[in-house]
Length: 423
Image (cartoon, rainbow, N blue to C red; front, side, top):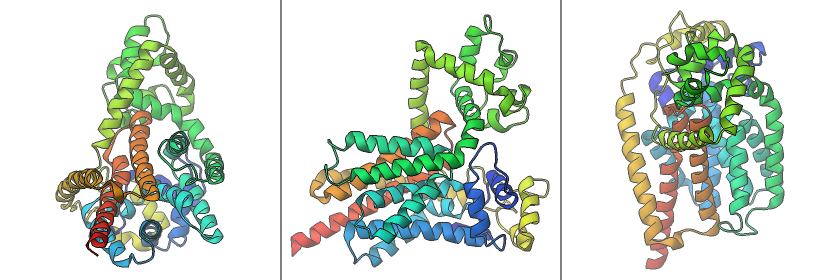
């Protein structure tokens, strides 16, 4: 969370405004679960300070990474763990993600909970705690439904070919599926009201909607037809900007019937289904290349809803917020930080590949399983976000720091092997 200290205040994003409103007013938003809003209220000690929210986010993540080290290396891991946390904090985007008041931090938290549940030798108390944390974390973001159902399905499919038959208990997978289902209950309202809008936004960005309307508006009486020449825009612009063609149709609920009809038509038409597949692959690659910090972290001044809501719910922190670098547009380190993050990512990939090739004995069944699941989670996150919403740096940043983490874990295993061979 050192980026929050550098900023002088927890890092804010436009969505922070909605989360504060939902948590303090008990209002279920139309586009996201209410879970993170409640977390902000509870973790801030009912509005005493947002610093506590950042602290608890970072504490949970640190605890899980520490447990991952214990899983892989046993008990004597304190120095390695501290070195790793220092490295990740200074040279990857994890500190930015944990310092930011949006639910993104709970994506890697859910992944780590899943790994520790499946492979950890946990006491009953710790296992129940991990189940609870998995459930709460999974319910933080609508993207988690597809991401973690997909991850568990892939684990089941690969179980015979990659994982040891007995290394992943079926009972735990069943429990995880159930917890995801229960999580769906908390986000079902948001999914029902928003999924058509987000996916249509992706179709706009991928050029699918424009192509479909150009070829079908002669025979179909869609309201969107009159705006088909105004669709050369990004997904987030289609979804959020007041001037978007979306709002010419009315609100999200009023547009639902027409949008769902168009989406369904493109999926039952082979030509457009193939375009969906191609654009999904391109969007996944695009998302994998996007993991910069600072995406959307502009200055939120007096005229913004976020400023007014901090003033309303946390009036004792207004002076501190106005003194922050973000408010004063002084986050000058972002470009330099992104350069470091980029090169650390490149070096981490090279180190991971080279060590994997020169010494395959580094990978025990458990360690190999952990690596495979974390890589699958990174790939699924990119596919999920790029395909069903939009490829942006913020959604890539929340997961890509796990590649340097894997590289460090592999490097420590390599050093252990060399030390044993010398003895």
